[in-house]
Image 1: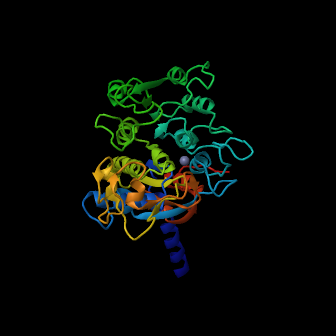
Image 2: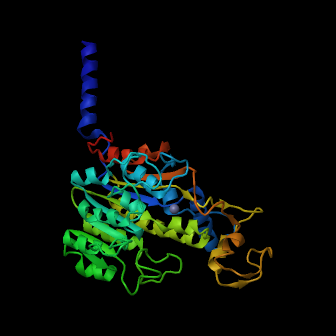
Image 3: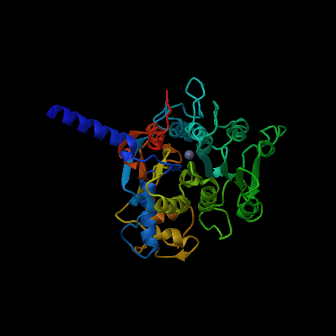
Length: 412
Ligand SMILES: [Zn+2]
């Protein structure tokens, strides 16, 4: 008799667990990828925030380092300990490793599936945005397959086929192919029912024109060098487009009862670091932080149903906080262009602070203009976030997202 009661109790507990007492699925998912953002990029940004508020020593958290879950992800690709962005993007989007320069395909060239597709098929709306060209490696890993990441035209032509509801970023690179004589990717998108806007004002007047939208830049106010990248966060003017705005627009457009999945890339953290340019690296990172704050506000309104995951595809630049001596002078970033004969309080260097010498003045070291093979951080908060604690492979991240969303999908 006693044994039967015990069994009944266990059965009851199991029933409770599987009938609503288990974890809630993540209904709204924000997946942030800081391209090239290693641990030390984040530490440098935090030291800069502290310096900018007048403290010579210390760090002021960026929002996402206050999130409760911290993990570490390997970044190696199928054929190198130092990955490129397309192999890493493929890992982060499909859960499979591939060779450097390949995009959304395995090393033999077979197509892999980005998690954005099964998520979309399960009824969630999908948004993809970046600060670089929309057919660049990281965003493209979520909608395209090609044996070569540089086949921008073929990659871009897969964007309208995706049917995903929201895209934002810099223009297509090679919109009419390198030859310049193919059908324009812009026309192809419009032909597939996408409403294209140029800048946020244009978007706000057109946002209800179609279920599927793309935001590029305003041709007058936004462009700095070219249309294929958002303006640099460093010294950007108030009326220029930024990631936080496109993410706010995406949330408004994609919010629905079923839920959404939004991948947001801070694509120019990597570009700043490739140039060994500490000012642009830090400002692009803080720009992504601003977008994460938009997601965090949404999380605060829907804490049980929202998951925010932040990671990186690889580290860029081999950045070090300290090149020679025991000090950092991140305040030098705010002195760019300024004549100063005592920029770090010790007469280490005098003269004008320029983009060429600001890292030296700040005492930031770089080992390479390329990527490095170090592990990258993973932060998470919200529904299912516990799974992102500890050590993992980059291919585990999309698997953990699908598990948190409780979508029935096999990565085989
Ligand atoms: Zn890179």
